[in-house]
Image (tube, rainbow, N blue to C red; front, side, top):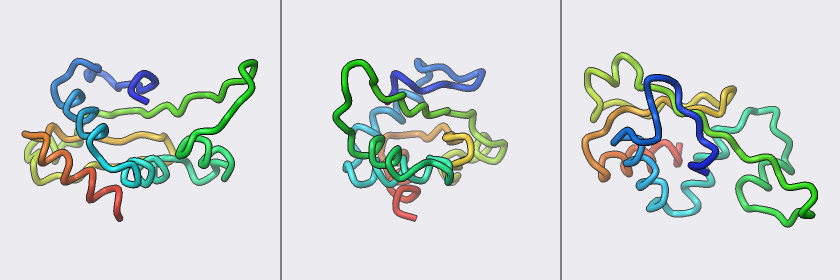
Length: 118
């Protein structure tokens, strides 16, 4: 999924908090990752597409599925001031999230777990 992510300037894949995010995503239980992705999909997404993104599907080699593109946005103004007490903000209409610059993997994991279970 990280290969298909896009980053809003000034973010890039090499930013330390972005690398922390991907490390946390790899450590999260599958059910939490699936719940988070489901929340990030626009409400108009077809049930078949939701299933395909969450669980994978077999496709003919001539028609591979379009990747799910996650858009990662810079932290909100509040998150810039107090990152470790700021929530991750989800934007389902844009398949995007605003990611605070958390101080550690544990803090990132805690917030990802929280946002994936609401």
